[in-house]
Amino acid sequence: MWLIKLAWKNLWRNKTRTLITMAAVFFAVILSVIASSLKEGVFENLVKNVVSFYSGYIQVHKTGYWDEQILDNSMEKSTAVEQKLMRQKNVKGIAARLESFALASSANITKGCLVSGIEPQNENQITSLQQKIIKGQYITDNDNAVLLAQGLAERLQLNINDTIILIAQGFHGSTAAGKYPVKGIVKFGSPDLNDRTLFMPLAAAQDFFSAYGMISTYVLSLTNPDLTEKTASAIQSTTGTDYEVMTWGQMMPDVKQHIEADSNNMKYVQGVLYMLICFGIFGTILMMMVERRFEMGMLVAVGMKKGKLMFLLLFESVLTVFTGCISGIIASIPLVFLLNRYPFRMGGETAKAYERFGFEAIFPTSTDASNFIQQGLVVLVMGLVLSLYPMYRVWRLNAVAAMKR
Image (tube, rainbow, N blue to C red):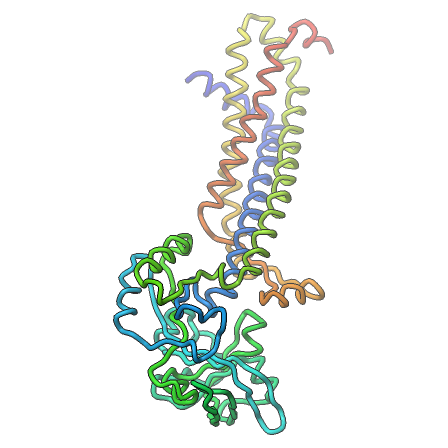
C-alpha cells in the first residue's frame, strides 16, 4: 500500500511530465473511441438505409417468388401464417405487402415506379414510414390515395392533392389502370428508394392489380438484428417448403459484400491508428526514463532494491494510464454524441458512388456503450504493456553509470 501512495506522490513531483503522459493516453482514447464509433455508425447507417427503411431484416414469400417477382407468384394472405411468424421470439412486428411495378404518369411525364400496397399501421411500426412524410398526411386502410417518394414526385412534377395515373399488368395478365390523389410525400435516406417508390393501402393495391386477398411479401422486424440468421432458420422450419424465408443479406448480396469489404478495410485503418497510439505513449515513457535516470540510479545506490523500484514504476504507470483512460472515455462521450447528431456529410464523386449503392452519403457515429468500454480497455492494455519497458530498464540499471551527468 505504501508503494501505491509513494507512486501517487511521485507523479505530482513533476506535474508537467505526468500531465504530458496522461495527455498522450487521453487523446489516444478519444481517437480510438471516435474511430471505432465512426466505423460502427457508418455500417449501422448503411444497413439502416436499405434494411430498416424498406426491406426489413427478413422477408417471407411464396417459394419461387424471389427468382421471378411477378404477381402470379403472390400468395394468399393468411392469419394462420401470421400467427406462426409472430410466435417467433425474436420477431417484433410483421407487415403484409403487395408489390409490383407500374408506369406512373402525370400530364406528359411518365416514369416507372414500384407500387407497394401496405397495411399503413403495421408498416409504420416496422419502417416508421409516417415519420418520413415531409408534406401532406399519412394514408389509412380505407383510403384510395397514394404516398409518393420525394424523388418520384419531383420527376412527375406532382404535389399533394394532385392526381397520378398508374398503368400496369395485373394478376393473371389482367390490365391494371387507375388514377389516385396524392395524399402525402415521403423522403427516404436511400436515393434509390426515394426515386421510384409509391405506396397505397393494401386493399387499394389489391383492387388495382385485381389480386383480391393476395400479397407478395411478409416483412418482419426483429428485436435483435444480430440473430437474423438464426431467426430466419427457425421461421423456415416452422413455415415449411411452401414459403421461402430470406434475410436482407440474401436479398441484397451486393450490399452485404460492400459492407464486409469496407469493414475489413477499416480494420487496417484502425490497426495503423493503434500503432500510432503505441508510438505516442511509448515516446512519453522514453522521455520519462531519460529525465528520471539519475533519480533511479540514486535510489538503487542508497539501498533500494530493484524489485521494489520496478513495482514503484509499475504503479506509477498504472495510475497514469488508468487516469488518462478514464478522462479520455469521459471526454469522448459528448464528442461521439455530437457527431451522431451532426454526422459528417460527403459530397462530389464520393457521394455519387455511395448513392449508386443506394446509401445516404453521411457518416454518423455509433453511441453504443461497448465502443467506449472496449476502446478504453484496448488503450489501457497497450499502455500497461508499454509500461513494462521502464521495469526492464530498472532491471538492467547500473547505478554508477546512471548517476553520471
